[in-house]
Length: 158
Image 1: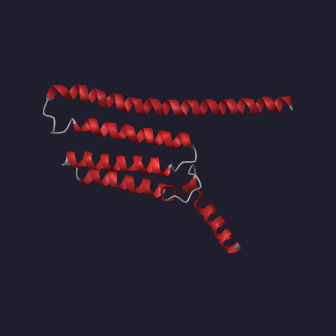
Image 2 (image 1 turned 30 degrees about the horizontal axis):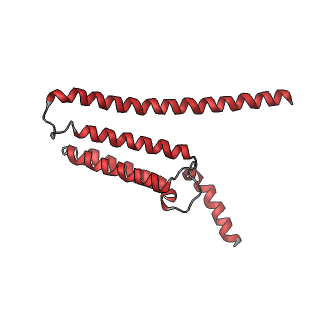
Image 3 (image 1 turned 90 degrees about the vertical axis):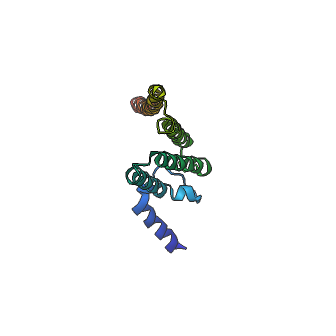
């Protein structure tokens, strides 16, 4: 019994960086989340580079990967903070929306006059993702500053 707990402590000490932000769970999505992300990045790079001349296949493959990760986020909810799970899901939904709109810019849509509005929609989707991320960073920063101010006040009062 003690040997297993010692081995677990050693494992946690050596590989803690891979578990930061993830909840303690035996669900396979949570256990392998970092590995799944690495596999996703690898597949994305291989698709972007390896099949660059087949844009319909690229977009379809990337869309499939995005939908797969949406399902994983919903089923596994790998992050400790539920807000982080929702944010990651929102980002995945934006990626899917971007890819759906990007399909309209392939050879499927020969209308040249529609390309500019479609491009503006893509810019709006990217802008939304940037805005949401900046907002989340700003709110987290405000919360941390508020906590520091409260701690400083308590120290002065003590």
